[in-house]
Amino acid sequence: MSVQSIGRDTIVDGRYRVQSRLGSGGMAEVWSAADSQLGRRVALKLLASRFAADAAFRERFRREASAAAAMQHPNIVSIYDRGEWDGTSYIAMELVEGRTLKQLIQDHGPLAPGPATDLTIEILKALRYAHKRGIVHRDIKPQNVLIDAEGAVKVADFGIAHAGASDMTETGAIVGTVQYISPEQAQGKPVSPRSDLYSVGVVLYELLTGQVPFDGEAPVSIALKQVSQPPVPPSQLEPGIPPALEHVVLRALEKDPARRFADADEFIAALERARRAPPARQVVLEPTPGEPWAPVDEEDRGSRWWVWLLALLVLAALAAGAYYLFAAKRVDVPSVVGKTTSEAADTLHRRGLEVNFVNEVSKHKRGEVISQDPKAGSRAKEGSTVTAHVSAGPGTAPVPQVEGLSQADAEKAVKDAGLNPKVKRTYSDSVAKGKVISSSPGEGEEITKGRTVTLTVSRGPQGVTVPNLVGLSRDDAAAQLSDLGLTPSVTEKESAKDPGTVLSQDPAVGATLDKGASVSLVVAQERPGVPDVTTDNPSQADAEQRLKDAGYKVQVREDPNAPPELAGRVTGQDPAAGERRSTGATVTITVGGAPAAAGPTPSPTPSATP
Image (cartoon, rainbow, N blue to C red):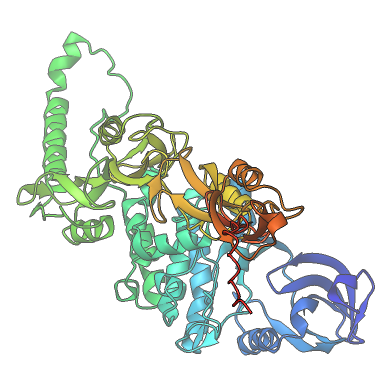
């Protein structure tokens, strides 16, 4: 049976009768169940079937049970039993009837400083107990804090807890929930109890403001903020947060573990001091409420002079007391310019001064104090407030519309918006050379001033490199040119090559042309066959005419041995009939010679007279 097929009344391991599904997490499902042996309700946590075959997940699940089962504390969910059933692992643990701290925040929004402090101290008590036993939770978040019907706080899910200083998983994945992990966890560095205290600081921040200090769409971007960005002081989100409590929050969220609280005890003590600390002191003189003066008769006025004297003495005493009460010691105002909000608050509180942070758009680094009032070196009453102006960064601006503008106009528009232009160029068939094709980030996107906006500027149509077409067929060469946006211009030339073969091209290979330009191709044309001028022995004149009509030159050779009847007639040709020769070539014909002329008849030689 798989975890997915579990339902009401399923009996797990012969002991636990499933009642209802409570929820699911990253690697397990949780059900309420009845323990038939001990007669109590439990929360039954079963490893999801898709992980049951994975040895690493089973080991992590086993580690949760081992780590938590060893700890018995009022603020930690108790583990009763663990085992294997139907191919998966399970844990039987205390069933907390109530809701998670996350649900409390979602239902009620930000909490008042008092309740937020109380809840945080209860979480810290659980961690103090775990840390003293060498256990680091590594995934403190409101979802893992349960509040029962009586208001008791219990920390659950030690599923990724690890004894002692911890490191990453073998695969190198970040362990923990990214909105709550410490900077060292986000960087994959070893964690320590102070890593848990950072996560508690995030939880306290969320309790006071209703939101986490760092959030975003992608886990990677949130992790980067955890590592590099200072948190917005919580009082800027909820002005009612006392400065002393805000100082505790900001110290817990220090990037450097060494600057955080040393342990849970120190964190708790700081919260208790912040609870007792008075708010930013402000003396407001108001009339003392009392009954209105009753009118006095003239005859009574003289008899009551002592009343006036007593009143004057009381007023003098009150004035003296007020002077000694309110004339507080004056202290030197330290310089906090250039410090972070946390450093500034720490410096001023050590001098007995309160601080009020005011955000200002500035080119200075976000979270850095850029000015203060009173100025450093002046004297101020102990307990008075120093206003520290904090850089909120350079502010934001929308990316201006730049598409279709010239490069110069687009760069000016970007600079005028407080952004930095950067140009890259690319070819475009549709946008004229020198005009902006697009911007990144895109038009209208709100970005921090000072960021770079990349302008993609058109180079115009891209030049086309002429390929090597010689030796290709006419059709293949034409197809290549067409694919490149070029136009073939074809002429034919008689050649011994196969008909249609490209003999030459112009421009030559490697030349660069604009799209649409023409490339001249000379293509092989089959040579004509030599006519037959020997059959039936035509006259020399007829043969010469036929050859000239076919485009050939004629050379005549006389054959003196031809029979007399073939005199003046063609008896042979070279090349032979049908052979292919280029137009203009010479064809030699053989013509029979004229018969030899007869000589005088010789006179007979006279014979001797007998």
